[in-house]
Image (cartoon, rainbow, N blue to C red; front, side, top):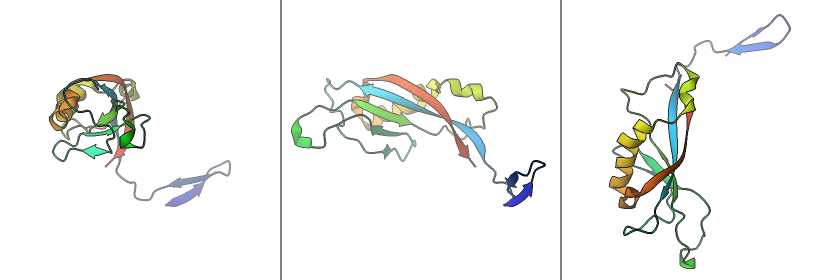
Length: 136
């Protein structure tokens, strides 16, 4: 880290050897799973990552702490994945953050979720958002 002083006396810090990071878009999806179906919907799901696809999900929302209380699962989950390397490029325009990547949902996330948890065959995307990660 190197420091210098600007004309108005403020300190200016910068790295001597910059860290090579780029802003990369990441999309998160809030989904609701039909809880009245033939497959069991996970009641409580800790962060679960598929070792093959990298797709992750976890339950979301208020739940009871006791399995014995008989309360049904909320059916709400958060999920996402880092895009494949061949399409994971630094973004050049911040307007790309105005929308989540629904193509990634359709082609990667949803099929992987359904493969791991058959109950995810009946899900609806309730909300989604996009943000930046600093990636090397």
